[in-house]
Amino acid sequence: MKLLCGLMALGCAPVALARNGAAIPKEKAAEFVAEKLDVTTLPSTIRPKPEKKKKTFGDYGYATKLADEKQILAEATPGGAQIHIRILELKASAIYVCVEGQGQNATSGHVQRVVLLKMKNANAFLKGKESSKEFDVCPVIGADDSATNSYGD
Picture 1 (cartoon, rainbow, N blue to C red):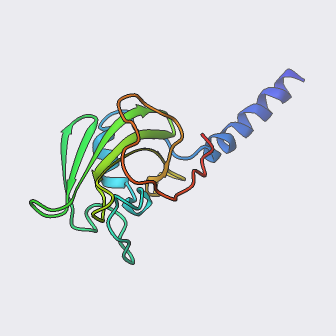
Picture 2: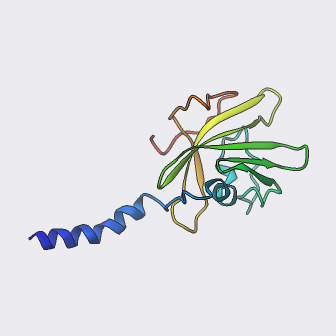
Picture 3: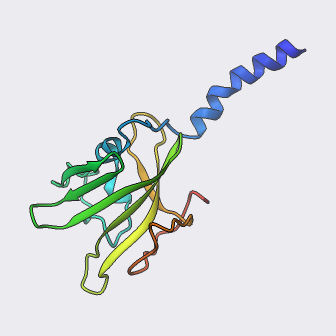
């Protein structure tokens, strides 16, 4: 009986892990985010205007600079729109980041949000949703975004 239970647990483990999404690398996490982030899932007040077949900073013509192991600066053109991303918490299948930038319209001003990034599988992009989890180093600043939190965190 113990053997049968053990075999069933081993058989179910890959299914349970697959449901939680792809693993996030702990080394070079900022570089990973810069390459794999679907920027169209960032808060609408900060992200570039969505265009067909464009997903990453590179697709939109942003140059990304890694300030250190936990910070990314994405700039549209020298002196253009900037998006600053700081990794707040790194988990096995998700990353909490602080995303900040100048709002798209004059009334938005400076905008800052905590965003939860997840991947469905190793070949997918990192998708972001605003998080209800709060971090003292990243208070909510700026205009409200109407995006809802589908992760339920």
